[in-house]
Length: 137
Image (cartoon, rainbow, N blue to C red; front, side, top):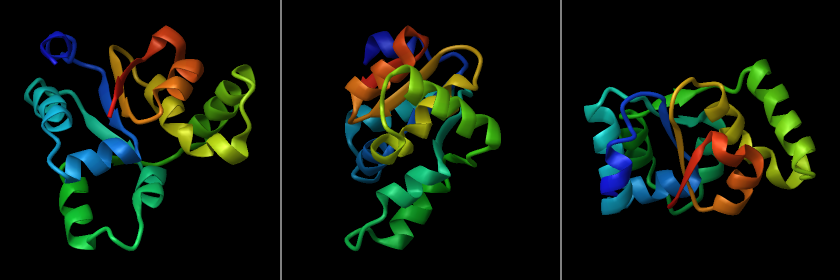
């Protein structure tokens, strides 16, 4: 984690559903990344689609709302939608299975260092290559 702390001076830190889940579970690694980013005024965000993906019957709504209130929840714009389709097409991935990977397209819309906290590092690396730093959740 020490290596990542120096790289969060701007850009964005995005969470996928596993990153959000670990944040809600107070995972020290994910919480440390978030605190470091916020201390450097780096936006910490997630796609509004991530909220849908993260929901299941065992999630307490009060905790979900409290944790997401500390993050920026980003809408999926037309630009993100088309960028996601291009990423999927270029990686030969199918939208039915990988549509939620719109977090990759969201990250690529930011300038500067971009970090994605995800449990699906292989797909994110396939979609983003070296344009985004992928951190396993």
